[in-house]
Image (cartoon, rainbow, N blue to C red; front, side, top):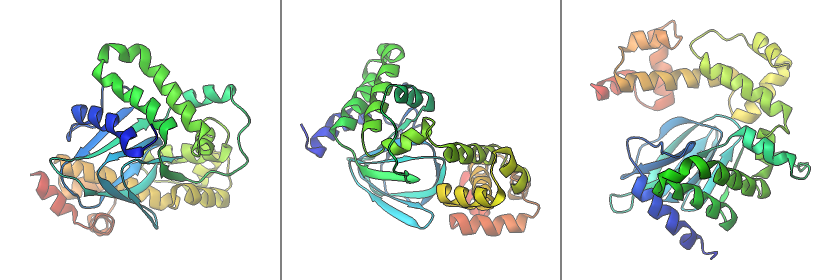
Length: 291
């Protein structure tokens, strides 16, 4: 069975039974199902290191200055957390948008690489987008199928995850996964820096100190950070700050001024300007929606 639509049918059936528009997480560790019943406006986010598959519907994703159209069977893998925006362009109550995500565990990939051949010389792209094939969809279907037999998850999920990652390593996405598994010192240096920025976004950032911490010169750090994430370090920090602030506004946990200061801004007016430039709406508008 090699017809893409036929390969997706069993995944769609299982995902439809377990999808929720409120919480994408599932009982299988690292597996998420995203669902929507209507088209959406652009929504900003952070593309975490994971495998993503669009099973049903359609979506458009933008990374820095690049935009991609996603249809059924399209999948993607990114090296590191990438700022992006996405909007669902095809979804309905009778035929909802369905997307699947599998968090990639570097330790699983590293373990597989021990028994595999040497890595290819080709330098991987920051993000790889392609049409999923049978070799990937079948093990993904087995992992997803555990949602119908929850008693098997603890025993079989690690095995199915390992098989799934092995198939990814054998295909066009293998170069990226090898980087995650340890064959790419620059990747790990930039990932460490990106993770530090994400967890300390509300604090002042000293570029020279961060570059020294990960063992790179300032010039090299700037060049590789932008090549991998699509953003300069300060722009990346600003994006993370604004994302965190938007989450707080949506939750109604404070007013615009207090949230601006908590995000690391010294000026509420500057925060409002950058917020509107990033999201297309003012922070006040988002706060009123949560009321």
